[in-house]
Length: 95
Image (cartoon, rainbow, N blue to C red):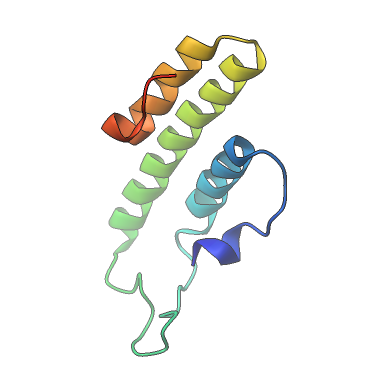
């Protein structure tokens, strides 16, 4: 499903994460057919409130990712790492 939102290559992986989060937030209300073709729409069980909550969470994640990218672009590697860690938690290793 994620592959249908972002068509590579668009640039740095960091930028692709930002674009994915922004596009997912915009399209959370779209119909998402089961990629395996075995069932109905994947997000059919989500009501409007749940979709809005998901869109808000995706937008918050996008804002964090945008901040991390901006900090990287400014050469603030440690601060950028701290922002990425807000998204990826302990999966982030120290630079």
